[in-house]
Image (spheres, rainbow, N blue to C red):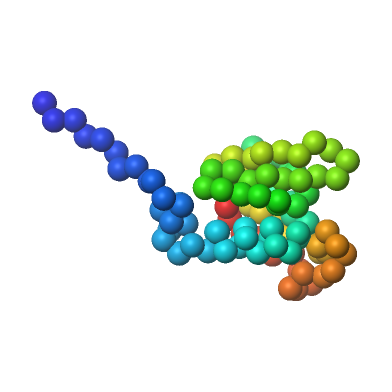
Length: 100
């Protein structure tokens, strides 16, 4: 009896619908050290800046609180805060949200 196996996503491009936009956006946040708010799928909100990321998680660095490794599949959205960690305005006056 033949068995069906589901196709496995093995590259980050598969998670990004082949565009690579997620990687570019996260890289930009890391380089600019932009303050972000991460809204989790369960509604919890976390704030800090993304210091590192890979295909499966982001490292959220927080001032005065423990740093967190957050699995991407638990993230609903990432929204930029008004100012970067260094106090410089981001690209726009409004916070921009991106789906992880």
